[in-house]
Length: 186
Image 1: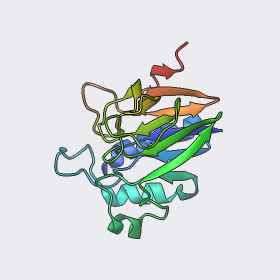
Image 2: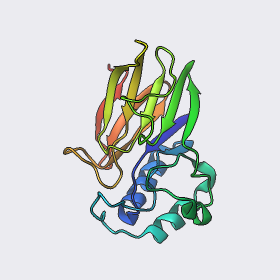
Image 3: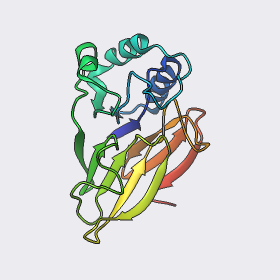
Image 4: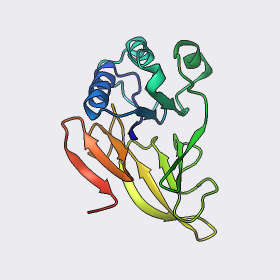
C-alpha cells in the first residue's frame, strides 16, 4: 500500500490542486492529511490563491481516499462542509510492525510526545518544516519524528511538498518531483 502524506494546505486552492495532481501521479492508495486544511490562521500570511471553498470542493471529490487529523486551525464548522472526518486529534497506523502516531503537532510533538514504544514513529505537520530525526522520550525511549513540511506555506526555506510511504520507505518530495530526503537512508 502506498500512502501520500501532506499537511498545512491552509485554504490554498493553487497548492491543493498541485497536491491532488501529485497524488494522482503517485498512484497512492490513501491521502493522509495532517491538519490545517481550510484556514490560514492568524500567524500566517494568506497563501497563494486563498480559496477555502474551492479547497473543500476539491477534497470532497476524493473523500473516500482521505484520512485526516485535526489541526489547530480546523474547527467543527469545517466538519459541516468537509465530507470526510476531520476532527480526530490523531490516527494510529501500523506499518511493518511499527506504530505510526499521526497528529497535527500542536498537542503532541517531539517535546511532548504521546506514549510511544521504542522505535515507534511520531508523524506530524504544524511547524511547516520537513523533518526526520531520532528523538527520545522522558523515559529514555527513542522514537522517529517525521514531518512532511507544508503544502502551501513552507518555512525555513523548505519546499512546497509532501511525503510518501511505500514498502517501509518514506520519501520527502517537492511538487517539482524532486526527492530531497528519504528514510531509511540509502
